[in-house]
Length: 80
Image (cartoon, rainbow, N blue to C red; front, side, top):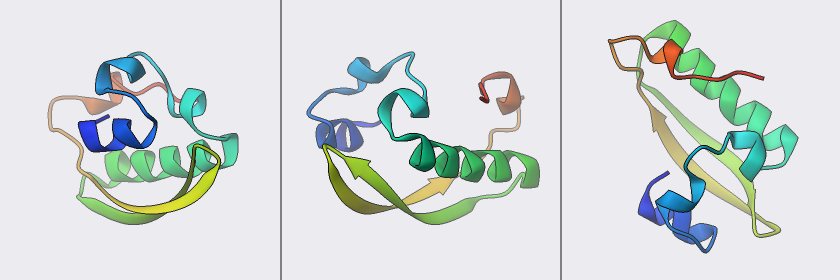
């Protein structure tokens, strides 16, 4: 999580180390976001999405760009 995203949650990036999407977002939102990550990995291409999220009880929309690395990103991912 970068500084801008962490600030939305009133934190800093270090506050979110070791957390999954499901620790931060409601299940429906986390599932949708992880599906985007999974698709980027499987397709091996840059994926750009507009996403709805819930931050501090408010609905927000943001744009995300996901690009898998070439050296085994699937080893880093934890799916639920």
